[in-house]
Length: 141
Image 1: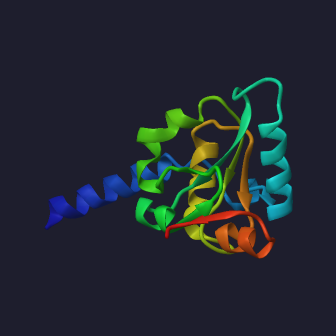
Image 2: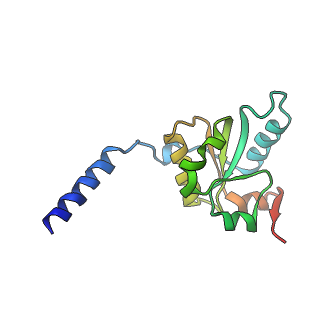
């Protein structure tokens, strides 16, 4: 029992010592209209895909297939470290979860900032807010 307690304390200290200091204060929220404008600017850029705005959906793949924002890239939060290379050429990254204050989208945004991505925004309202604003949503038939 004593060894398990020591291991737990060590793990706790290591995790707390690795805290990046990223909090909700580091997040930048945008609404659906602002996100749509950024996505439109990216599509009409003469520079091509480099420094483009990428909208990332951190939900599980099954949920993404059910419905998602047009042109969104699905990178489930649990797969971020394996799929982050897809964001290497991004200028702006917009993270869009399911609904307002989506905890997965907030966690993804914080993790992207921790990983060194500098222009990360979180879509306030997520997929629900996007659809409520009249923007295009792709749904499974």
